Length: 297
Image 1 (cartoon, rainbow, N blue to C red):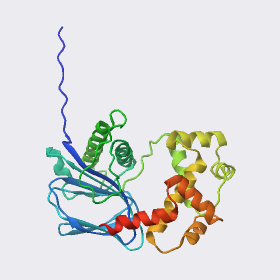
Image 2 (cartoon, one colour; image 1 turned 90 degrees about the vertical axis):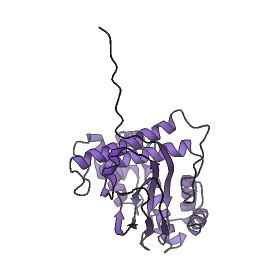
Image 3 (cartoon, rainbow, N blue to C red; image 1 turned 60 degrees about the horizontal axis):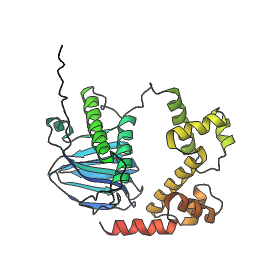
Image 4 (cartoon, rainbow, N blue to C red; image 1 turned 45 degrees about the vertical axis):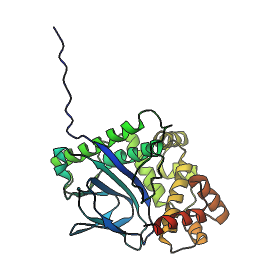
């Protein structure tokens, strides 16, 4: 019996990527607006922002996303209090299913957030152009990128759009996204501990304290974080502290000594060393770099 192939249907076809951005903005950032002939979405990773899309105004908070259709004029500004972290991705897609994204502003779930994180991860590996430059109009290819990075960006973006459409069809975006109760026990435990770390971010925690308060063994705890984050739990906790420090620096209400004390460091010198170890910059260098980006808007 002869075999007959099945040609796979592409319901979502991404023709090209225009820009991929991950921005860390000052709390007073304001972008006057633009329109262009391709699709764009903005997702809030941290903080919140005020958005306009043609004559509509929105407040977007952490875990929310908005799509701008081609030729739609849109603006974005921080609220003057919270320094936001934003993902902005623009792309060409003429598939009929893009009608689902017209005027769409919604909350997204863990699956969608993970797909966006994968896009950013691969973009950092295959794009030479800095992802935090709002003036980027052309991304430069990294010739030494790992095999398949660009294709993975396309795959992850298509998977993101498909996931959102499926959830829209099922009516799962009528309320803020709720984490699935079908997560594996390890994922539930990981989420519990990361929440605990966020709640105790201003404290000095040891592995012993984390184990005791979360009823988990030391080896299991370290294994859990190495599987999820490729680092130990204390390294993860340090990264959380530095991310909070970066936000506080961008909000521009406190000096470095105050920030250091706020996030639980007794020495500003140790805080500076940890900050540079994780970001590659001192707090002063980071503040200067962010100000340069903000001043170029």
